[in-house]
Length: 42
Image (cartoon, rainbow, N blue to C red; front, side, top):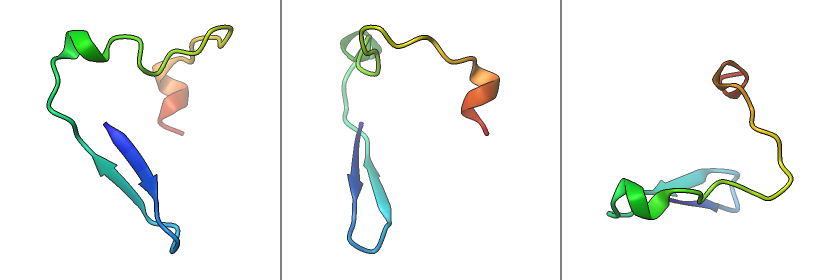
């Protein structure tokens, strides 16, 4: 999945066709604490 910010502040989301196993860890950054799901929806 890729996100592209357009000049008019629109965000495009493109979905890639990969298996879930290939995407594991994509959003993880070392040193970053996990965020509860309830906080993500705010």
